[in-house]
Amino acid sequence: MRMKRILSVSLAAAALAACAPNPSTPPAAKAPAPTAAPPPAAPPPEAPDAFRKSPPPPGSEVVFVPPRIEEAKLANGIRVLVVERHELPIVAVNVTTVRGADQAGPGVGAFAGAMLTQGTKTRGALQFSDALGKLGARFSSGVNFDGGGVQGQSLAPRFGEMLTLLGDAYMNPAFAPAEIERERSRRITHLAEMNDRPASLLTIAQSMTLYPEGHPYSAPLLGTEAALKKITAGALAKFHAAVFRPELTTVAIAGNITKADAVKEVERVFGAWKGPAGAPPVPAKAESPAEPPALAAGAPRVVIVDRPGLTQSTVTVTLPGVPRATKDYDALLVMNTLLGGQFSSRLNLNLREKHAYTYGARSGFDMRHGPGPFSAGGAVVREHTGPAVREILAEIDRMRKEPVTLEELEDAKANLIRQLPARFETAGATASTIAALAVYDLPLDEFATRPARIQRITPADVQRVAQKYLVPEQLRVVLVGDVGAVGAQLTALELGPVTVQKAPGVTAGQPAAGKPATPLMLGHPPMPTRLVPPPATPATKP
Image (cartoon, rainbow, N blue to C red):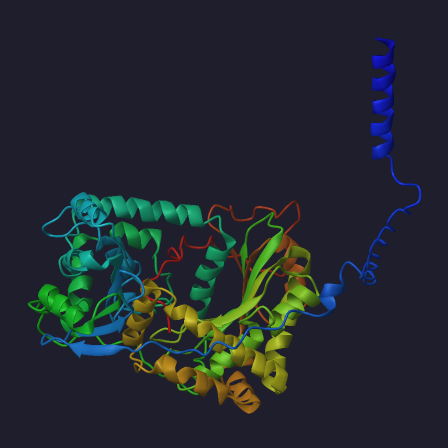
């Protein structure tokens, strides 16, 4: 037993010895570990706003390519304008007359335009609305000073059904008594609401100042409360019969439809329509004289609509402008862009950026069939009303006396040309744009040729039209503000006679924010309750 244990121990020791490394054999050398590459050196830290030093490069210049406008005419005189756009299954239409509210008394034309979609001779107002709603169509109606009618947009397969309904509204409005009273009430309520808006009161006062009583532009498009209360179904029907005639109608269509199909649908809906006998009404005189017409003798140079307590004054420097048909349209477009038609205009850089009198100042010509108003101004800080008016007049005078720089001119031209694609951005915008070509009797290539015409305008052209149309003797200052706070500022400018009108709802003689009215102001009765219409218009001016 003992011998077995000794033997087992000996065998185990021998086994362990066999497994031990041979001391005479050196161990294999280990391969050296690879040396790691040093990390790249970190770039030097940049200032947080270093990227502002290098503005991103501009994208490639977008070349304006106007759409192709195709034309047809029905036997009864209706004109059809078509732009094919097959990107989306949508068709838009604008059925418009080329005469407007300047053919009737205050408020009548705009009232009739709103009533077109308030029921026809075969469909009540709700029935008409429900029928278009079932088609998923968008629709509206309206008449401005120069034209108007009905507009709509639907999916292409439903276009024929939509045109049937819109054609019924355009040709056969019912002027139902109940609907007239509802619309009358809505408009009178809107008048009362708008009396609290200085911008609306300014437009009213501007029209009254520039145009004599009885002129189509002396009263706002919406009319007056007194005029609205007198409008009858007979007056609306008379206006419709005179202005909505086949030979005065243009159907502008844009979208996923061919010219042949568009003309076929217009023929189906309007082909049998016959207008009344006699010649249609003519538009206002198209061309203005060499200088704006003189205002009445003794007319005030400054008109203040008194609204006590206002912290801002809403100001315009204004005169009768020019009609859309003027031969100087392109030069006036460029000149006004430089003066106050863009953010970098002279007026805005002066009143906003340099003096901080306003959040924004602008200018513009409201070109209609006749000479609508020119306006330059904005809402300014009450305490700086006088200085702001002085700066507006100074910028107008500078535009007349100093040629614009080439850099300014090129910037204005580029701005105007780059705006053109937006006029054709959607099917609805396209239909409205081409309808306006008919309203203002413009050629179908108006937008195709406009970029080249604008590029030809020179600094001398800009100065010439500024001198011709911005006549200092014709300029009037009209504003809505607190006469107690701004009256002395305006009389200090020594511009001429100053007239004060009390805004609706303000009692004559009421003190302005605790300040006595300046004795240099002339007292006048309260301002008539007049109002501008809602901003929607039946067609975009070209």
